[in-house]
Length: 220
Image (cartoon, rainbow, N blue to C red; front, top):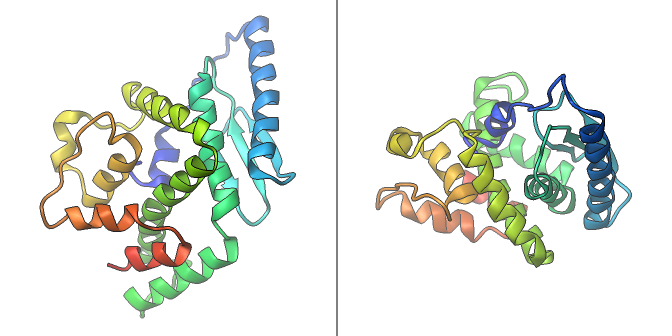
C-alpha cells in the first residue's frame, strides 16, 4: 500500500459533520460488533478503541491496543479488512522481535546511521512493513478462511475509491516498493508490472512464513 505507512496516511476519513441520528446509531452498532469480532479473532482481550480522527486502523503491538476509524458509510467488507489486517499483526507480529530485527537489519545496511532518528531507519521500517503485511495477511486468511472474501472485496473497494492515489496508467512509473505493495493488496484486480529481474522478489515475499523470513527477504 504505497508503503504500509503511506497507505495509512492516504486513507482519508469520510466522517461528515451532517451525520444523522440513524447513521450514528448504525455506526455505533457496527463498531460494537466489530470490536467483539476483533477480540474473538485475536484470541485475547485486546483493547479496541474507535477514534473519529483516525485515518485508518492501527495496532500497537506493544500495548495491545487496536484503534479503528469511524467513517461514514463504511462497508462491512472494508471494516472486516481493517480488523483482519490489524488482528493479523496482533497474532503474528511480535513486538520485541520486530524492534530487534529492524535495528539489526538497519545496522547491517547503514552501519553509520542511528536507527531511531535517521531517514535510513524510516526506509528500513517501510521495506520491512511491505514484506510483513503480505505475511500476516496470508496467515490470518489461512487461520480464518472466511475472511478472504472481505479482504478481496475490501481492497477492491478502496482502490476504486482512489484511496491508493494511483491509477492503472501510472503503475509502471511507481517505485519497486510501491508496486510490490500494490501487487499484494490489489493484485487480483489489477496487473502490476514487474521486470523479469524483479519477479523473484514477489515469490520471495510470498513464501515468507516467519518474521525471520521477513527480515531475510527485506535484506535482499
